Structures are given as C-alpha cells and as structure tokens.
Amino acid sequence: MSAWAIAAGLCLGLAAGVLSGIFGVGGGILFVPTLLLLGLGQVEASATSLLAIVPTAAAGAYRQRAYGNLRARAALVVGGVSIVGAELGVQIATRIDEDLLRRAFGVLLLVVALRLALTGARPARRYPDVS
Amino acid sequence: MTTRLALIGLVAGVFSTVFGVGGGIVVVPLLIALAALPTHAAAATSLGAILVTATAGAVLYAVRGEVRPGYALLVGLPAVGGALLGTHLQQRLSGRALTLAFSALLAVIGVRLLAL
Image (cartoon, rainbow over all chains, first blue to last red; front, side, top):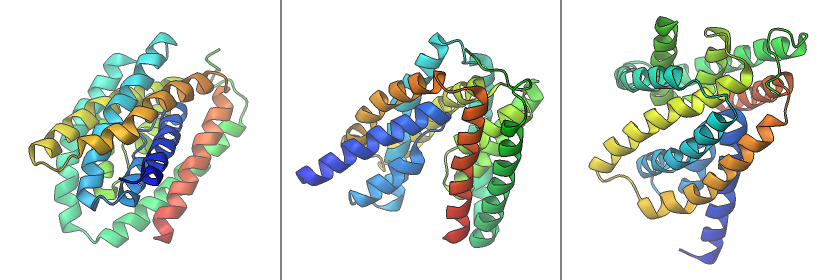
C-alpha cells in the first residue's frame, strides 16, 4: 500500500468516525467507498467495513453511555432482531428488481428527511435538549 | 414497547442488506418516530444496536474469509478517535439542531440512491 493510500484511509476513517459519533450511524457509508478506493472488491469492502464498524460503534456507544443517552436494552432488542431482518433482506433482495427497490428507498428517505425537518423546525418541546 | 423495538430491528435488518446502507440511517428516525426517543438518545441507542449487528455480520463474513483485517484496522482505528470526537461534538448540539442535521444527511443519501 502506498503512503498516499494509507493517508487517504486514515483521513476518511477519521471522517467516518466523526459522522458515526454525531449521527449514530455505523460509518459504512464512508467506509465502503474508502475501501473500494483502496482496491478492495465489493464484497470484501462490505465485509471489512462491518469489522471497522465494530470498534467505531463500540467507542461511540461507550461514550454515549457515559452521557446517559444509551438505552442499552432497546439497543440489544433492535440489534438482535435486525440480524433476523438481514436474513429476510437477502431473501427479498434476490426476488425483487434491485433498481426499483433502490429508487423506492431513496424516495422513502427523502420523505423521512422532510418529516424530520418539519419536526425539527417545530418548538423544541417534543424533543427536549439533553443538556 | 418491545414489539415496536423488534419491528424497528426487523426493518433495519431488511433495509441494510437490501440497500447496502447501514441500519443506523433507518434506526435513528424510527427510534424517534416509533419509540419516542429524544434525538440524542436515538443516535446513542442506534450505535448500540449497530454494534450488535455489525459484530454478527463481521463474524459471518470472516468465517467465509472475506474480511481484510489490515484494512479494517487502517480505517477503523482513526474512526474510533473520530467517533469519540463526534459523540463529544454531538453533546453540544441541541436536539433540534441534531434533528435538522440528520434530516440533511438523509436527504443527501436519498438523492444519492435516486441518482445512481
């Protein structure tokens, strides 16, 4: 691996971590393209991204627990059941047109984004600040 | 409440495999909408859920020999520092600001999925 590739991996990894910590996402949205850029194949990139997410999410969750934001039981239920959901997803993905699904999901995300924007614009009563 | 949480997990699992995006994108808004969590708690709890899912996924891929540990270390190690920094920065954002920022993130990803 060239020095340039190592520097790119470190910088984009750091950015993925910041994104993960702020938004509560895994960071795969940056990990996967970074790993593809470094020359990994699609499956290898997804697999390696999952492994990179483990310490990232662990660090974020650990820190959030100290801040009193983590609902551990809820996290275990959601995380545990999503493993089952992933298996179901494989079945669905192999049966339905991928492009159609992707577009439908894109539209869904935009709708949710709009709803969140409207909630966020409302007075803060329903979503009190943690501070 | 457990039923709703289980439903969120199911939806997240399906979406993450079908669309190749992490579950967090789906889990955070669902925890806000269905489980009535404040935005900061939703993001924190999403990280906990992702920890469980990603661990299971990484083990399954590792068994099949698809994981490249050196590369995972290269991007994962700085990401740990980034996650600590990100959670710290998040505490300085109000619930409303965080909700709006997350909405913007979703919009970007939504547009990307449509544009592909």
